[in-house]
Length: 204
DNA sequence: ATGTCGATTTGCT
DNA sequence: GCAAATCGACATA
Image (cartoon, rainbow, N blue to C red; front, side, top):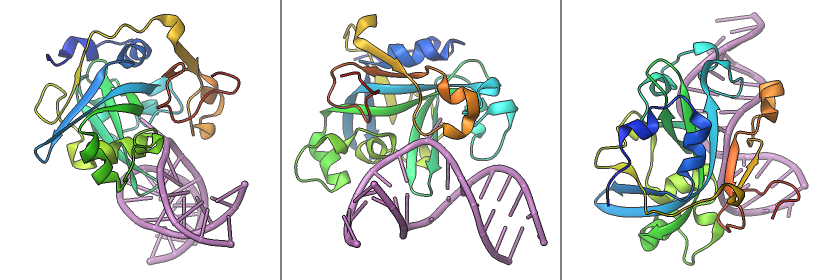
């Protein structure tokens, strides 16, 4: 199955990338183990002008350096000291845009995911939430900056069609400190899908 | 140097 | 339902 090519990521419309990633497969081949899941939930972070984005005002640090690189690479950072959050960098070099992958539905290597997570039974918590899916797929900060056309992490299009009315668009999680930008509708998830971290109020 | 807080998860009260 | 876990960035000293 072919990997999504670089032009898919190198667009300036990061929200479009975030929406189109829904229904695609996120695949990792780490430590000789292949694991994959269907992307069910994403968030867009729109660079210099987005107050919730690590790259706001083009502010550059060792942690967020990879956000400024070319679209089509991984940006992995640590949150709350323990969680490794996986993002896909979009846009041209110099514009710190990215899509946070917030949840997946396990498809391949479920046994390996359960082992990594120390679970004995499949459970929604296995990979619904950005920190937990990173553990399930074996994604850690040393992988930040690697290409998504390489041999460790990539996206595959399985031809699953996601129509507009199957996508819930709502506000991002945990960005209260971003002021007015916390209200921006930059979070997307598959309606009716079990493997989503949190549902928007009143939406099944 | 020290303290606070975050794109979160978990176990225990 | 709450608080601990504990890295990197930043503010204050």
